[in-house]
Each structure stands twice: as structure tokens, then as C-alpha cells.
Image 1 (cartoon, protein in one colour):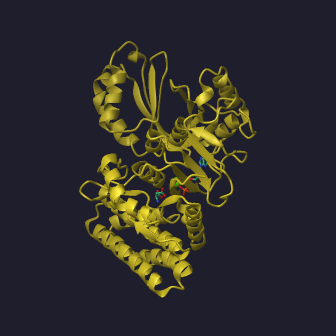
Image 2: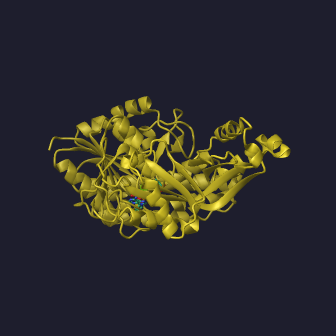
Image 3: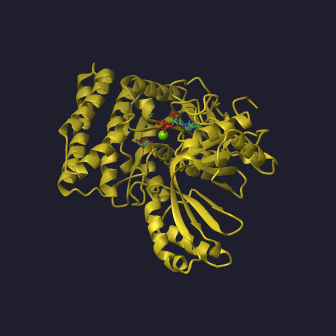
Amino acid sequence: MNSMLIVMKFGGTSVGSAERIMQAGQLAVDTAAKGHQVVVVTSAMSKVTDVLIGAARLASTGQWDPALRQELFERHKAVADAIVGNDAARHEAVLDVLRQRLDRFEKLCYGLSMVHELTPRLLDAISGTGEMLSAPLVAAAIASLGRASQAVDATEVIVATGQYGGAEPLMDETRAKAAALLRPMIALGEIPVVTGFIAATTDGVLTTLGRGGSDYSASIVGAALDADEVWIWTDVDGVMTANPSEVPGARTLSEISYSEASELAYYGAKVLHYKTILPAFRQRIPVRILNSFNPGHPGTRVTVEGHPSAQGVKAVTSIRGVILVAISGTGMQGIPGIVAKTFDVVAAQQANVLMISQASSENNICFVLSAAEAPRVVAALRTALELELMRGHIEEITAEQQVAIVAAVGDRMRGAPGIAATVFSALGAAGVNVIAISQGSSERNISLVVTEHDAADAVRAIHGAFQLDQTS
Ligand code: ADP
Ligand code: ASP
Ligand code: MG
């Protein structure tokens, strides 16, 4: 095999304990021993980000519990004890870093408990601490296995916009920083361990890329370094035909296309953050999804062609906890501009529409938003469409909670007849009521709105109808 530059990302469970961190380190070192250059991107240890966010929310109500800091310290110290406990100097150096980072965390929470105002910027500053704690441990594990390694804060590498909680990389700036900081380390044969999830604005303020964003960090770093491959190490054998915790017969897909991967991730396959694919796709960098608990498994390869599949549908996904907004009224027919006005409001609220469906009778437009965004969009719609409501052109604007989107995805659904019929007869047979339907014009996806209660049955019914549990 030719020597490659590989960016490897380890998710929370893959660095969830001392044993897992040693295993992650071993995977990086083994790959480097084969003659490859390796850059690691790490998540926080499993659940740590949730704890940090919980601490921030608690502090914003005026309470600060010092025991939280201690718990976080103990959990990370236990890892340091296990991996470098026999090397006093290295052990003390790692503990020092942990203490500094927890000091910063504690000060932020303490300040917050005084001012009671949790801004998105402050939430990022606090929630990004987890990766700053795990990266030094992963680097220490790699060093203990005999490869030089350094933890690197992504605030020194990824330059991003100031949209706190969902920052976007500025690739030219990121490229320059990655070249200046990471290239010299790689050239020396070292393995840099970059914190996932976090970035910094052009002014140096910490931002995050959004929950689950370490996958995105890996593809950003991969693109910035012109890497040959990006490997996402997680806790399942790759991207599967459905969420394996929901569908016991789900199978690993050996190869999928960039578009299938983005579509699956966008419609709820948590195994990949939905933005991960774009930076890799632009440069045609292959992405692999691998299981750190089962490293011998070949996992999933994301490539340009994907893998031709006879059946058309490759996988079924779901997103829970979304809100269906419906605007309806018999008087909407023939009144121009209601649709345009509606989506102007949505755009002005910077809300992300997950799915749109309009009945051909024009009596109803409905679309799906995240639970976080729906309330402000609905309020803005009621104001913007006040006149139409008053005149009775629109009868009502409703927001239905507790719905889910279920999507069937596959590049080769296009032109394959009978797919929709199979989906609907499977749902009918399973007694699932479909609330709304949409098929993208790309024909890569059929998505449906069902109640949250029906979501798992719907996923299983579609999975079964296309026999996705059997190898094609
Ligand atoms: P990590 O911590 O490694 O980033 P995540 O928990 O974010 O891991 O993502 C992996 C999880 O995604 C799996 O454990 C699985 O429960 C879930 N998942 C949902 N849909 C799929 C799918 N289609 N294929 C594989 N895993 C999926
Ligand atoms: N630690 C972050 C989170 O839990 C990012 C990630 O793990 O991808 O959301
Ligand atoms: Mg993840």
C-alpha cells in the first residue's frame, strides 16, 4: 500500500475509558507503523459534553456545584493514571493540563452563575471543554505506545464563522493554519491529536460546529491537509441499512456514495454528522466508517459511485422530535404569494426546513422544522400572515408536536418504478398512518411524516419490505 495521509476521528465511545483510549492510540500507531501519516481528531469522552451542557444550564440558574468539576477531574485522571501512571513526569504534565482546563471551565460556570445569562457563545466556551480534556489523554496514550504525539486545540487550526453552536469553517484560513501547525508535526513523524467539535472565529473566540460535530472536524481537517482518506472510528460496523438499535436485522453497507451518505446523515443516521461529507466530497477524499470495537471489519466506504444496488432503497432513517407546521385553508387556492411569503418568513428566521409537502389542491402547505426552531417561526408566520388569516384565506397555522420524519434513501431509487408503492403498502400493512409525504426531485429519497409513536414501526416495515436485512 502506498503511504497515505489519513485523518482518523474517534467518537465518544471510542475514547470512553482508559481501555478505549489505549485501543484508539493503538489503531493510530498501527496505521502509522504501516508507513502512513496519521492525524487524529478526537471527541470528548462519552457523555462528557452532556455533563458540561448540564453544568452550564445549572449555572445559568444561579447554582454552581463544585462537585461537578471534581467528578470530571476524577474521570479523566483515572485515565491518566491508567495510561501514564508509571511515568511520573508525563503523568504530572497531563494532570496539569487537565487542571488548567477545568479551572477555565469552573471560572466560566462561576461567572455564569453570577450573571445568569447563558448566551450561545458562552455555551460553546463551556461545552467545548470535553475535547480539550480528552485530546491530551489520547496524545499521552499514543506517546506511551512509542510514537511522538501532541494534543492540538482546534481553535489553533479550524477558523470558522461566529455562528455559535453551528459554526462553518473558513477553508482558506483553515488550510493556512493546518499547514503551519500540523504539517511540521506530521513531517517529523508525530501524530497530532486535534480536538473535534471546536473551532475559533477570526477573532480567536471559541465556537463549536454543533452536536456530533467531531465528524465534521475530521473532514474539515482532512480537506485542509489534502488528506488521502478520512476514517471515522465509531461503535458500529459502519453505516447500516437502519439504526441497529432500532432494527435488529440492520446490515452494514460496504459502500455508499457521497450523496447517499449526506442524505442518510441529514435524515437522522447519527453515525455521521450531516455536514461531514461536503468538505470530503469537494476534494473527492474517500471517507470510511469503521468500528473501533471491531477493527477487523472493513466498515463502510464512501465514494463517488457508491455501490450499485438492485433494489434502489439502500437504507431507512428517522428523525424524532421534529415539528410539523401546516398552513391550511380553502381560501388559499389561487391566492398568489402565500407560499413565497411563508418561506420568506422561514428564511428570515434562519430556520432549516427538513421537509416540505404541498397538497396539489393548494389547500395546505406543510413543512417540518426542528423543535428548537419551530416556536419562533410559527410566531413570525402568525404575524406575517395576519391579513390572510383575518380575511379567511388561511384558516389556520398549526404546529404538530411529536412527529417524526422517516426516509428511504438510495441513489438508484431514481427511475425504479414501484418504490413508492412498496413503501406505502408496507406502511399500510403495519397500520402506520402517513401524515405527509415528500419525494425530492433528485429521487434519492422518499420522506414521510408519521407520529413519533409510529416511527420505529414505520422504519422496520420499510426495511422489511425491501429486504434490507438480506445481502443483495
Ligand atoms: P460516535 O460517538 O462515535 O460519534 P454516535 O453515537 O454519534 O457515535 O453514532 C453512532 C451511532 O449511530 C450508532 O451507535 C447507532 O446507534 C447510530 N445510528 C443511527 N443510524 C445508524 C445507521 N444507519 N448506521 C449505523 N449507525 C446508526
Ligand atoms: N462531543 C461533541 C458532542 O457530544 C461532539 C462529538 O462527539 O462529535 O456532541
Ligand atoms: Mg457522533
